[in-house]
Length: 485
Image (tube, rainbow, N blue to C red; front, side, top):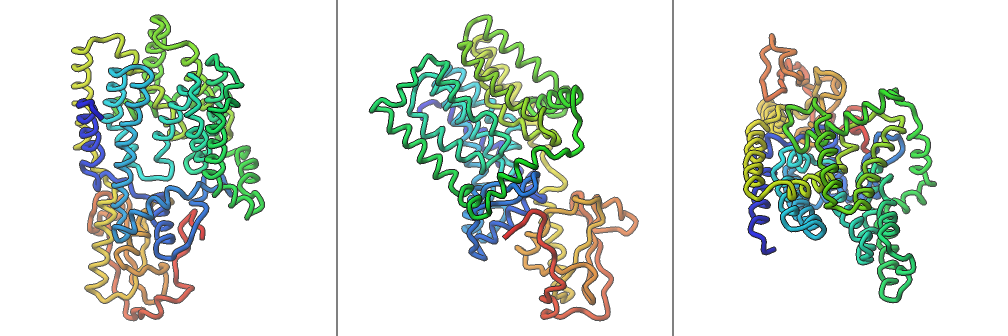
């Protein structure tokens, strides 16, 4: 890696992904759940083919991310903050990847612009900090773009990577399924003859791609054989279940607005995400300029269009509620189009000026990244209750959340990690700590405040439960939602 500018971008990317990490680390149900599954792998030695159940009942995400977390949990004594290591590695590799892909297909300066945007966009850096099983989606999308461009040129060395990415979709997000055929289309419209696949020098790439695809997909296949193809059946039924989402023209507007808001929130000033149309206007203008100047092949632009169209169409015809994270995979193409158009429109001095302004505005978000429900405040709550329970000789305690349903999440694993034994509220003789969220709900009772959370001490009971009674099966908490063994 000889480009000094790229080294600078990697350093900036590292800063944007590490500064204030604990205070901005979102730790809620999904993080609690993958931590619990990592514990199941490391402590209980349970081997898993699947992770948590998805929003489609009976369909599970793959186990890759849980094993990834389990490795770093094991080496850090099961500390949840160890997630920062794989997250940062993936983020930095994504910066390198988008630079490499754009540099090799559209030129060095465009590659540097793309790498810079990816490195210092606070919206993208926040996504890279977001520790969920779907987090590697952006990295997957960057390399899927590389496969499309490679096969368009007839470079069959990309076939093994294509096989890997296709097999890996189940590990990330089934919303990526609609774009899987695009590399085949790219190969066909790139004036490549189909008989290239059977030439002696290329057949090894075809066979290797098939083998890698089957190996990568094998956890899914094993699970399906073992469970009578339950996920395929559940997927067939689940995608047609009406969840009350809007339809028709309101649905089309919703898809356009939501996708635009995701693009805007990741690349531009996040306060202005309500102006979702801006991202689409900018993209259309950039594509128009590229077409007018004939900078990128019309066939490649067509492939970019197919990617966008298939993702948008899939969400439009789906009966499920539209969410921003379904459109995150659109970002790499958006960055490519901006990088190529900026490279051709502006001279180096103007681009440098734009870069300074862009860096300034995004850096301003770093000091605002103190999230009042972050891991930092979750940890403070748990440590406070632990110290209180030790001081008062409580063998076990119960937690009651004074909050809307689904808000009191992200604590279960931390209580286990800090050695606090939890039992069900209402267990006889067990002190109950109340946690109002937000703490203002119980402001008159003067709770101990940690960010958005409050803690109210229990009223000491006359009869405290002993350590053996704490272990009774009827007093144990129910499994986390989505957790299976």
